[in-house]
Length: 590
Picture 1 (cartoon, rainbow, N blue to C red):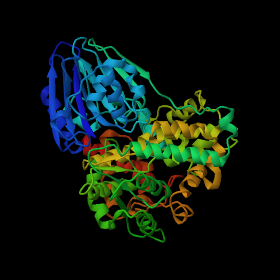
Picture 2 (cartoon, rainbow, N blue to C red):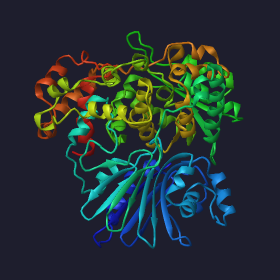
Picture 3 (cartoon, helix red, strand yellow):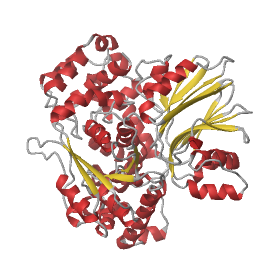
Picture 4 (cartoon, one colour):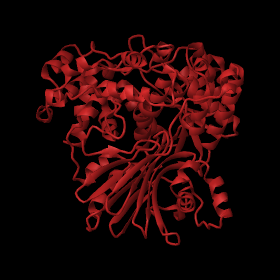
């Protein structure tokens, strides 16, 4: 895990090395172990390193191979790099390091742009060719690793974190109207290539961008998720699918043990993280460190799942740490979490994940985490509502969207109204080939878009704020492709995630499986009260908010009059959405 950055010029001028240095410095927390810069001609590259694979200086970046005439900056982890290394050595390639970065360089030289098809892992990279001047940017299939870019006068910059581009300067920070509609419709999700800032874009998952020396750019999608199965898949029994899935899970977890430092696990106490812990123990991990965070109980809502995490920790003999965070600490540290966000994220557990990452980073540099299971295996409440739907777009929007376009028109000022971008986006996704069943249309959208720009982005931002690498086995692309072959009825069984739960029964205690799904309340964020309410009130009434002119004052006044009343269908605060956006903009833009 690392932070990458770069500047490519098309106008004959040299890159701005001071701007590159600012980008590198801004991403220091992503890669606290070391850093470097390489510049040549019209191009310059920056890197901050977190040492996970090959701890020696041989794996330093930017990495340049003078024999092949190519260089790379890379963020991520390639789990099958030992196998790829052996294949490349058989072709005659020689290696001077033992990590995954050099494998990417040699693989690109051997197989061209299609080398990405051979990669199992999470990645964002920039590869440059010395002689042609061509640059290739790439992002992994499920968007686990971020990659932002901005056009500047006469060139282009990129970075792992959006604030790094702002630190470099020269970015158009006006609001993108379509992105604003997405943000206020999809609980802060803004699908790629958009970000809330008109001058910043993000490379979509599973995409390569080729940049020519004269500035011409072309993109191509190298992976897409298709829900297709043959007759054998359709008729295979639930029990058979359970066994096949368990084997797939074993492979996904085992691959994510590849590291030169110990790998721990985040153990929430739910079935997903508990299953990962069980599989890690089964794979022979010794002295496995597990971590669980909990908060105060509020109004009858339980604030932790310590008892369930303890069951799993005892079952597998892990070195377990409970991390209890009082509400006062959550609120005191909330500004730090907002500062760590590359884009505003309204989920209540951002601050919890931020503090959990800080505690975990004292003992571990790598952990496996359970994000993605609900989207991949059908764990959310809106999937059953779509079974047999004759109007899946409308049914999905009714269950998922925070507000319809009629209400949206009451939220934003006229210059930002535009069109119903969120409804159009869902319709385009549902109408795309590769998913015919209404449930699978929703699963595909949630897995490849909503998951990428909510839970996955949250995990990346909050863990990397403390130089902690989080690996997500449920987003192993081979496992995701396997899950797409499993008929939707098997996923919806047993109240959701049926086939996953049955696979889990073969390994983890039933008490962890047969219980309601837990949600941790952070009342000051859910119902907006106390100092957070005052911070939101100040943000929305500030001079910068008035000058930006995003929101209608009558709508803001209505929310402020009853801050705990206006809750979205997915239990978020509508006031928090508006207030966090202004807070984030004031923190990062001004």
